Image 1 (tube, rainbow, N blue to C red):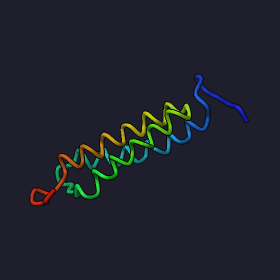
Image 2: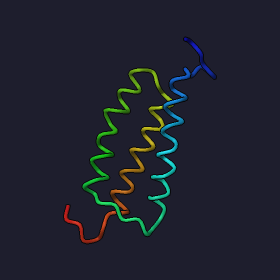
Image 3: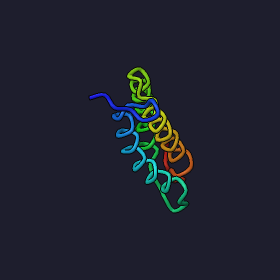
Length: 89
């Protein structure tokens, strides 16, 4: 089945929409100063997004690659600004 909106295939829209839910929740965690998230959890998550973004780009899922990039950047932000002060890295 071939269907596209503004030149973007429907699968890309579905994946990107699903990613937006995660982006909103992670963005809230990044903005909330009370959030404490270990670097041992957030930085590996961010790093694992790199091959995911590359995979989406090579598949032509550019909208999904953009939302995955936003997720990756938010994970890096959480790792930098929301890690506990006494965490050894």
